[in-house]
Image 1 (cartoon, rainbow, N blue to C red):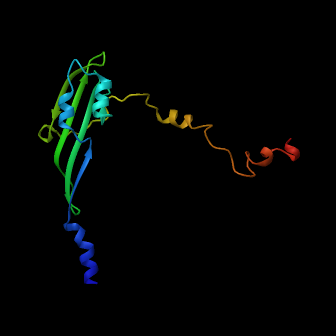
Image 2 (image 1 turned 180 degrees about the horizontal axis):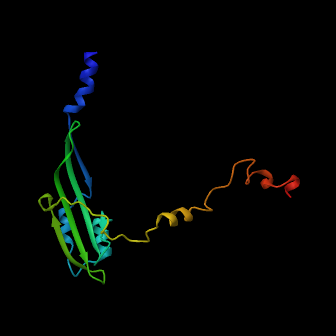
Image 3 (image 1 turned 90 degrees about the horizontal axis):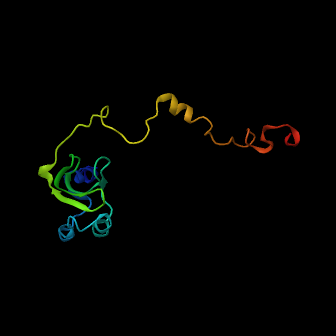
Length: 154
């Protein structure tokens, strides 16, 4: 019984470090030249961005974060790197910036004033949109053999 308790409590003492996101290659990042490189060359060098801006000039973000946690205690960030690549209207690199954990800020998004892309459906629009999208009935139902018709399918 005592060994069981120790086995259950032992993971609470272990420390776990995790890396998430895009791991920045310093040499590749330094190789990006504003006015020379474009979307295609950046994608070839760095790959698909973690985030693409939804508004304004196109901006790509490559995000990486290292965190540490001990047992059941909430994880905390060790490092965070964000590489921001801004493009002009023609797709050429305009600027490259790098941000660290010291630049990060906690925010509380306010969804009632944050614009969203696409059409927002109201309650009744969502309800009416689902009409007619119900799958066929099972055997013996309207979609079953005979289609709910009389003998001979008539």
